[in-house]
Image (cartoon, rainbow over all chains, first blue to last red; front, side, top):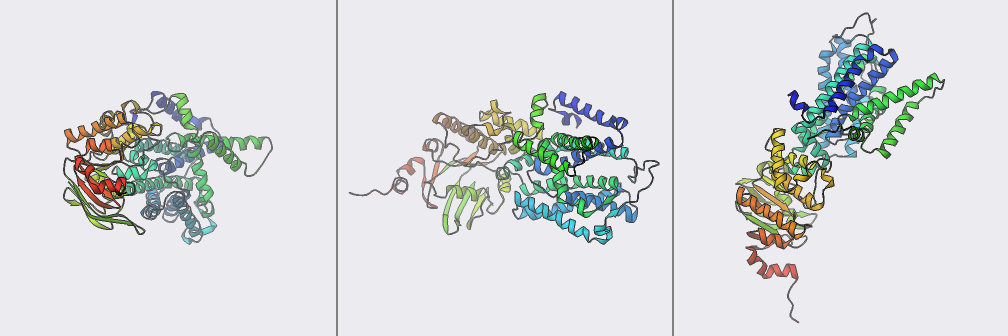
Amino acid sequence: MIARLLEGVPRRGLVCLAALFALLAVFPAFAGGYLLSVGFLILYFAFVGQAWNIMMGFAGQLSLGHSLYVGLGAYAAAALYVHFGISPWIGLGASIAVAALAGAVIGFLAFRFGVAGVYFAILTIAFAEFARIGFDHFRWVQGSSGFFLPVANYTRNDLWNLRGSPVMFYYLMLVMTAGAFVLCHALLRSRMGYYWLAIRESPEAAQALGVNVFRYKMVAVVISAAMTSLAGVIFAFYYNNLFPEQIFHISRSIELILGPIIGGIGTLVGPLVGAFLLTGLAEGMREAMLRLGIDVPGVKQVFYGICLLLVVVFLPHGVWPPLARAFGLERKG
Amino acid sequence: MLEVEGLYKSFRGLHAVQNASFDVPEGAIVGLIGPNGAGKTTCFNMIAGVFRPDAGSISFRGKPIQGLRPDQVCAAGIGRTFQIVKPFAGLTVLDNIVVGALLRSKDVSAAKNYAAEIMERLGLGAKADQPASSLTLPDRKRLEVARALATRPKLLLLDEVMAGLRPTECDQIVAVFRELNRSEGLTILLIEHVMRAVMALAQRIVVLHHGEVIARGTPEEVVRDAAVLECYLGEETQV
């Protein structure tokens, strides 16, 4: 199994990944509170970027409404915890189920009735907007006034109830991001991975080769939605507050797809690189400007825009593919 | 092996195929010819499951297949190529063929081995790791054939795979089909404009004109048929 996963991966790539993982693992020992929160955000965006990439990068289905799955995952686990005291580790089952169901409904409506391309993207936005407006009036989770998790003093980490220090969340996110990376790597090399790429490149040709296009597109949406909902669970327990206006907002959907676009759509490392570049640089720049006494609201968004523009014009396949070529890290076979 | 019976298809009042009937016996190579717009590709698309016929039946190895989806038709044992080639442009040549091979072997490494065999057979071995987008047109046509063959079809539908090939390239690919037909009993139905290829390959020919079958027989019979000459060259007029 492990030998199979490693087959064809360049040795240099493995060494780099191991070094990166080690670096991230010891990072909290050196980082202060602020740096740690930046590190958490980078890992968070790497994870959701990876999840989104399964749908767009592998199966070629553009979703602009992934905030829906983050929000559903967050609300499901948080509501079960607040109302019934159910641990998020059990609650995440509900999160996965709700998000996967939502993904399946959207996928079924679109793929059954031939909604494709930009029209599919619009449909995904529409469902995220339904949820945003719907949750504004959803009394059980306090509607538009926001849903809050009880915050206790962090005397010790309670991993079972996800109550604890940012360091605990950082490590949790690190494990999840590493897990997502390995999972995507394995998916990409499976029969399903080949079929996804074939569907992305030409659905007609894929179908003529015996690929059940509807089924494999559905699976891509469901896996992507389920993974994204896990990020939502962490989000809820990390920030302890949920507002429909924020969590389901389209700007959140856009924010989470910028990483993989800038890093390289359809690549494994792209979402990782994108998250490092965007979140790392944006936060670094904001911090530097604050130190210089310049406080410009919205500077992060302007920075995102500039990054996106540069990548679209100069590196249309993202930052990672040319880097991989330059360092001999392309996969073989 | 394939029986097509009374097939009709119209597109908004245009009768693309009218009452077309023909059959392809097991182990045969049958050519489907006719002038542009005769309905050949429409016939193909109905067999391959892209279009549902308005009327008529198609049966393959004794089972009706009209109305099945293209992937179900492929799984039943009919492979096809596209007239306008549709490579998976971003994938390597080998990976293109692996997608086809995965239909019968669920195991990826077994599929890779089989795909590599097919790739060698069609002379694409040297280009295994190139992206399909970098191939020339003749190579893209070969890739179409390789992908379809990788699904291990019993019947192969070839839609103008020789068009745009040089005569020597055409002869090479004709030799490949002959070999597959002889050694593995592969049945082939081909649409072709290149008469050199049709005459060399087909044992029987069906001629379509305005969506109707106007002649059928051996290549020698068909090229002497008055109705066939008329539809290709026009009516003979006495001056």
